[in-house]
Length: 214
Image 1 (tube, rainbow, N blue to C red):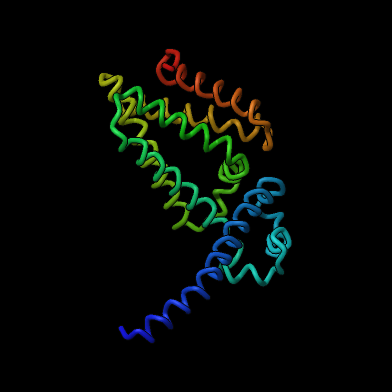
Image 2 (cartoon, one colour):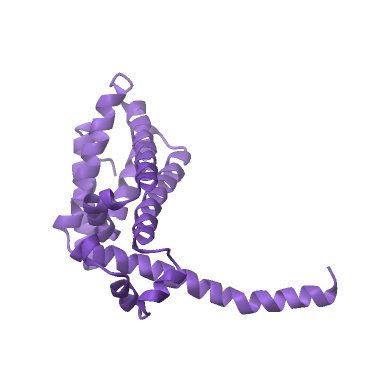
């Protein structure tokens, strides 16, 4: 590549990178606002104009980021399932003794639940509005997420059946995800820590019938 071409490319990147970053931020802001509005009003009660207004753009401007309202919901719910699975894989890949890994998974999911009240409520209530392909994708990601928990539980209780361990994992998720209904969206740090400790302890007892270590 010539010096001139390199310079032109560098100049182009310096111009487009901030624009790309701003576009990505706007997309993230739309998803955050969509989670809040869908949780408050329901999917059917929110228009593209509402979404645009929430981030300071017109309704039609939303189409620069999403093909329509169904695509917003898909990005929200598929995206959160992908994020959960990726996070759980990172935790499981960090070689620890079984209880240490399970504790890290619990901490990961508790923090997710405390940070994502709105998304949890949307997933509970609006999954049926996804296109079939997106709904299957979410279900596949969820099964893979559960399988990571079952694998760690199986290391601790090798004689338990995978079906029984999966049932325990689902029950734990229900307990942790109840924060979307029982904990305020905006909490002081001290209040959040009280909720975090309580959820962690209850989840340990639900999964293993013992108190958490540490």
